[in-house]
Length: 231
Image (cartoon, rainbow, N blue to C red):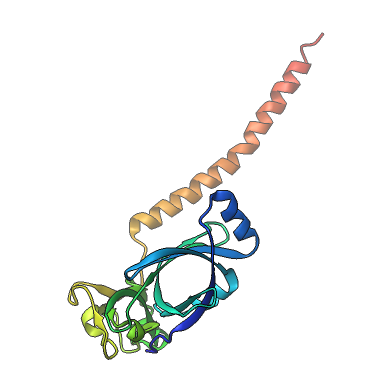
């Protein structure tokens, strides 16, 4: 459970503009963004898309945002908009934080050891229900992810939030006895109705293929009969 390490992010201040200027930035490989909160004024900026991608690789990481080389300000990602087709970031919102004040964040939960779990080896299906956990911690204590070993899970087991031990300095938010992280269910067997429906579908398909020939023969016969009455 590695904790986040502040990552320096160098950005350039920009004058807020319309959609045309934003499209120009994106064509140049830049991502527009806004830094706000923490008692300071909102500042619009632009940052290289590749630099930003690397900086955000660690979820929950604190960013040391330096605008035009000025003194860096600690901030965290508040919102990220992506292109629905290419998946690239097209806009980000960053919010200033104090390193001595706890904040709320979402952290990925990763399940390990599934391949050796008795229930999985018996053919059971491990389904992860919750992929992110809400946590409260100091910005520098927020982990990149929280892992849980499911190698002991058997068929019929349910993993709840209460079974996960957070790293030091991190509080898991939500009802620990109600939030389901994962389940391990028996192999799904097809019901008699599903089997009968599949057989009926196959029979219907075969019937349609078999009916095609008589229809063609009937057309040929009609054409032949028509040709015999042309005198």
